[in-house]
View 1 (cartoon, helix red, strand yellow):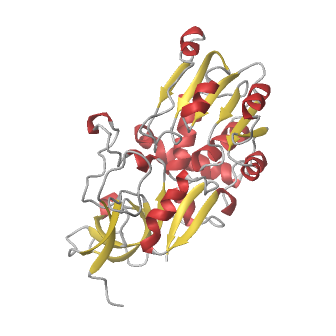
View 2 (cartoon, one colour):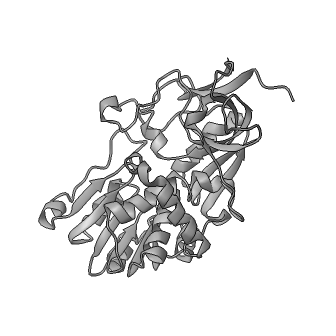
View 3 (cartoon, helix red, strand yellow):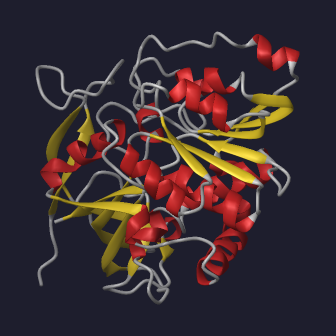
Length: 349
């Protein structure tokens, strides 16, 4: 088989202030074709098989983002969109990387890429587990959930825990770790739609509340009667504001994401901030990059919990969408439409 000499890439063209535009006169991304450079020593030529879709990517391309305030360099205009991927090695000049092997790499929205082998991680097969789980439950998503609920929120068996975005990639792992690994006394999920809520309850939540329901606020007050010790926040916005009034004194909030605010130039704003002062609520933001030193250890713990049946890692906790390369941005946008259950993965076809 002859090796490719060109690759298509989705290039960041216009940084959005609100919802990214996939068409029109000022599209956020444009599809371009570029030559593939020759391999240098200790490099690999990769073919992208699966692409991770993450809400955090929206923060990397915002027009109003101050690079000095961001935890990682933003995507420059004129560069391929950043993304974590599972790739196949087509050619290698590096010891230990062979043709046909699968690796994790930061290849971005590109069909083929040449990367330094040192930045790639070989994937070990686990019987009965899809390799796509390395982009979700057994990857950075699982690490984020573990770090946030255990190290940041310090949840334990005597705590009641609320998890927003509970049907998403990170939230669904938090639910399972909190209930099935830590043994928290009560785990309350928040998700959008009855079907998603039913699924969240099936993986461990004592109850899951539909934020789209007209009586959501009343249901939240009822479910958190007596207030809660821990809130794992994936959404920000109005639900965070509501939860400030449902926290126990000295409660702990792990601030993981703000998907409700990412595509709004004018956010909701916090109206209940005095609750933080009055009830001495602890709110701590975190980034998984601060925890990567423990990645191998924690991945081992997650694999162990999976084998023991405490964490469900199967097709039910990921949404894999077969997509031609020209449709990569459309699949990513499903994140902001509630179009996924668990991890959203693009399978490039």
